[in-house]
Image (tube, rainbow, N blue to C red; front, side):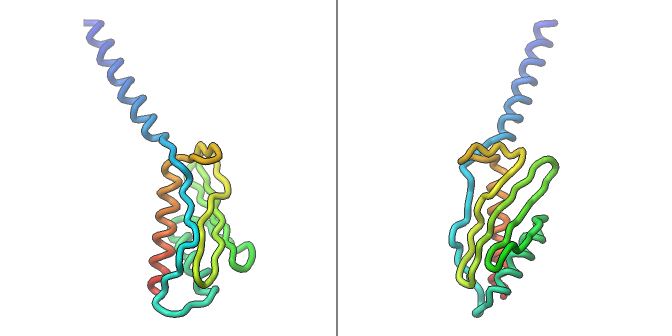
Length: 132
């Protein structure tokens, strides 16, 4: 009977460990480079800035224009944080990794959730630009 309980306990431990490892997956850092500004009409740099700022704010990012044509976005979730540079013009923008905390960044790879956050931010920016 005790061996049967030990086998069950060992099986449960393997399952928990596997789930934990899956949750800590890493992937190459996803950057958006020179995404085109697809708007329904000609727009200004101010319009592009507003689209980026509102897209980020809508997803919980803290967006700050550090100089004309350059926004820094910061996202804080629990003990994790991510910071990105977002240079932009009237014809395009980029979202580039800048810094992070508790995301396992090793110089080229990062926690997989980071990439999802950047993809969501990019989609939101594109949607806001398309509606202009």
